Image 1 (tube, rainbow, N blue to C red):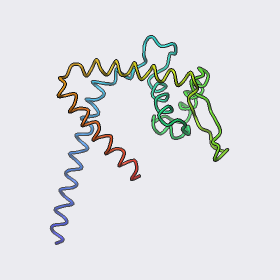
Image 2 (cartoon, rainbow, N blue to C red; image 1 turned 90 degrees about the horizontal axis):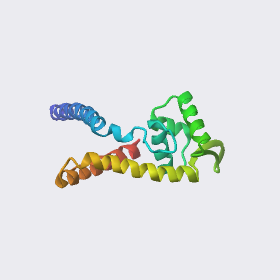
Image 3 (tube, helix red, strand yellow; image 1 turned 180 degrees about the vertical axis):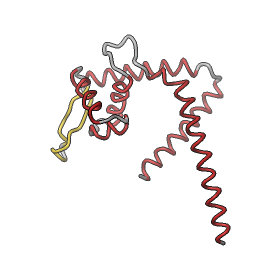
Length: 162
């Protein structure tokens, strides 16, 4: 019985190693094909960088978020995060509000300008990503969407488990 358990553990470890390799290869190819769609958008009334645009997307999706959580999502150090938040606040795209449940905490929320910019930004991302995906046939696009849905469900499961 012990030998069988050890074999299962060895197989599991090997599967994890293969999965990690595939994950890094996927990240590389994803960035190669889609990173340019996240770069600063031309024709914008704001001159935001990639992290600022990501922050707008994240804050809008969350409706409100603590700065430390946003920093974790963007992998930014506290100083860089504060500078970015200050710049977005100066552009009147976000504002800081006290958490009604705990006044010691600050939340970031999109302003009306921020919400309008986010809608516009998502439209621009959709156009850019559409240009990339148009290189594929419809069958491949459907398969890619299914794969993304599977990955999304899996990542959500991991998120809930932590």
